[in-house]
Amino acid sequence: MQRLLVAILAAVDAAIAAAVGLAVLLAPLTLLWTVAFGGAADWGALWPLTGTLWQVGHGAPMDIELSSEVVRAAGIAPDAAAFTLSVAPLALLVFTLLFAGRSGGRAARAGAWGLGVLAGTATMAVIAAGVAFTSRLEAAHTPLVLAIVLPPAVYLLGALAGAVRVAWEDGDGGLVDRVHDAVDAWGEWGPVPAAVVRGAAMTVVAVTALGALAVALMALTRGGEVVALFQAARVDGLGATVLTLGQLAYLPTVIVWAVSWLAGPGFAVGVGTAVSPAGTQLGVVPGIPIFGLLPENTSIWMLIVVLLPVGAGAFAGWAVRSRLVWEGTPLGTGPRAAIAAGIGVATAAVTALASVLASGSIGPGRLSEVGPAPLPFALALGGEVLLGAAILLLSPRHRDELAEERTDRWNAEMAASAPPFDDRLDRADFETSPLADAEGFRLPRRDPTDPLG
Image (cartoon, rainbow, N blue to C red; front, top):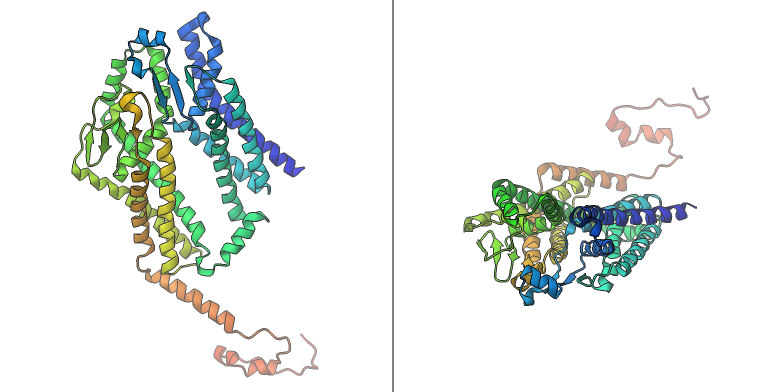
């Protein structure tokens, strides 16, 4: 019964995650439909648009084809009537990922993480298929296979990560415990995998916080440009609300761009453009208010910001090393070097995945290349993090750390050399033993026939 309950709760979690994501999109769209179109609104297009945007929020590209009537009415060039929107608004994806991680961790604590992950992912797959088949638009559509596969793939990744983390720490009596025992059998190299994952997670959180701080500072210093673009758009209150909500959905995407800027490679806002600490080359950019945060010019001295990702790697290396010392498992140079390399590689892998989702096309023509280039971004950030982690992990050991290691080694040697306890040891043997002499006392002799007490 408990396994059935775990499966039901995991399925409910997946349904809630999907429902919240759809409701966040459906509510403002319903308000827009009501205020903008009133009783003449085409309510049949509301759900398809909501479902399509939900799929885009999980990484599916959206192909947009404007009708000839719209092209003529808006004065759009015919060659700009069809384009692809492939830069994902990562807010929905991050929400699904975190919600799935919470569900997977709860299933692991209940002792059935595999069943919980499978039930949640299957439920999300059913919901994604239902949304994909009922939300087809002619003017804006996503590839059917990606629309069905990507939402459950995101949920599976989050649920699996949350479940394995809890099962690795608390045990599951199954596959994870067997893997844990096999890794522990590596001896000095046993703590390496867990330390790599822990250090990479710390690094990702640290560089994300740095990117968010950079965006906040730009909002403070260039808020006037953002307001000016809002005014230039000449939209009413409803239009401004829609623009604001859309930009909030893209806020995590903008943070990825900011991290790429801090790492050095920067990002593009169109073909032939570049925004990086070494310099800014921009042509005409869309009048989207959030683009008012883009720096107009930079100096070569701004490359000093690459020290921030190095500092994030150093922080992760310090945290991992401190935990190893606290756990009484100080490692040699080889394992510590492997941990530093693993942190750099894992960070680069996460960076590459994030940059793929945060880059692509946002419009026709020159807007087909927007965002950071995945390979340079991943290599730069991974190398900087590796440098910072290696500095802390491979630096000479502190005297307190060495003293603690010598104490642990001495205790282990004493425990290994001590003779086994023997109940047949005579009191006279104890009285004449070196231990008794060393301690400066002798037990009184006693006749074995004397009564105790």
